[in-house]
Amino acid sequence: MSATENKQLVVRQFELLNGGRIREAAALWAERSWNHGREASPATLERVYTSLAELKERHAIHEIIAEGDWVAVRTTCSGLFSQRPAIPVNSGIFSGLEPNGMKYSNQHMHMFRVEHGKLVEHWANRDDLAVAQQIGLELRPKQ
Image 1 (cartoon, rainbow, N blue to C red):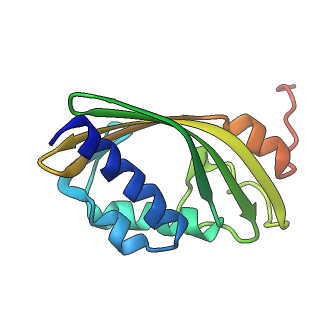
Image 2: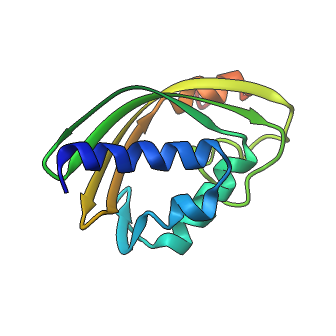
Image 3: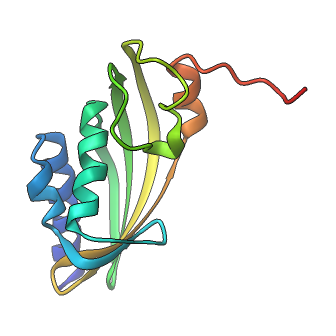
């Protein structure tokens, strides 16, 4: 696939996720893929995406670039902590606090690798500390 087609695939994934079409977004992944260095599949990604949907996460894409098999994208992610997600996503920050209806927004950088028209690898950097503070987690030094 061309770099343009790879970018279109990544954009499609975010569009599907933003539209709540979790199963379709997960189907964009190869049967054997990697998410943050852990082996993944469409089924495991569907579980992750379901948990993110429980937080009503939506992404606004700001920039997207591609070279070869790799696509990099910067987004703003916004969500709502109205329920605890089924699995501990986003470094598990939603596990230590009761859902409180707080909105949050933060910056993300994602890297995706594409092979044969499927997503096969994903890495991301998120500002989880900002989200933790926005949802009311109190950060204190160890005593």
